[in-house]
Image 1 (cartoon, rainbow, N blue to C red):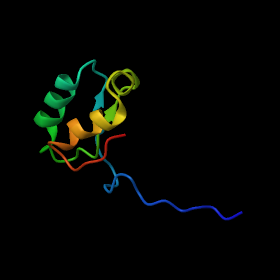
Image 2 (image 1 turned 120 degrees about the horizontal axis):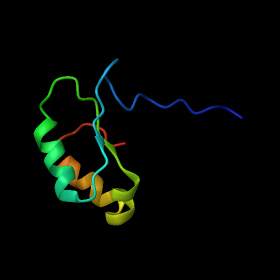
Image 3 (image 1 turned 135 degrees about the vertical axis):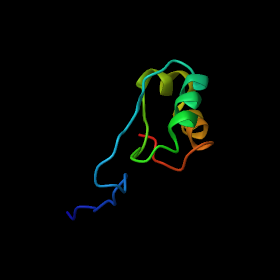
Amino acid sequence: MQAIKMGKIIQRERSIIPACDVTSLEELEKIVKETCDIEGIGGYKVGFSLALRYGLPAVVKTAKKHTSKPVI
C-alpha cells in the first residue's frame, strides 16, 4: 500500500496559531478580524465546542470572511 503525500497546511516555516477556544461565532470573528493582518499568524485553531455547537462549515465560513489562512 502506497502512502499518500499531503502538502503543507501552513506555508510558513514558523508561525503563531491563535487558539480560538471561544463559545460564539461573534467571538471567533472578533479574534480573526483583529489578528488577520499580523505578520507571523499562520492559521487559526478552533475549539471543539465551537465546531459542535455551530457546525464546522459555519465556523470556517465565519473565519474566512476575514482571512485566507487555514482554520484547523
